Amino acid sequence: QVQLAESGGGLVQPGVSLILSCAASGSIFRVNSMGWYRQAPGKGRELVAAVGNGGSTENADSVKGRFTLSRANAGNTLFLQIDNLKPEDTAVYYCNANIRTNWGETGDFWGQGTQVTVSS
Image (cartoon, rainbow, N blue to C red; front, side, top):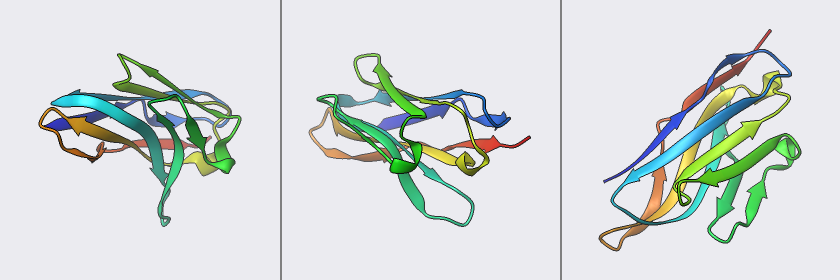
C-alpha cells in the first residue's frame, strides 16, 4: 500500500504565502516524480508544478514566479510554497506521485486533496 498525505490548506487572505506539504509512505521502493495539481470550482484538474528524480521541474505558466517546489525526506516529501496568493488560486490542491513499489509495480498515486481558499 502507498499513501499520500497532504496538509497545509485553509482560508487565507490575498497577498499572503502558504506552504502545502505531501508525504508519501508505505511500500515505496522509489519515488520517481512528485507534483501538485489543482482543480478550481467548475474546472478541470490542471498541473501546477512537478519535479522529477533528476531535479527537473515543470511549472504552469500561470504560477511561474509565485510557486516554489522543494523536496525532503529522501524525496518522499514534497512542499509547495505559494507566494502572493490570489483569489484565482482558490482550488482543491492534489498531490500526485509516480512511485515504484516494493513489489516491482510502478504507477501514479493521488492524495485526497486539500482546499485552498483565497478571500478577503
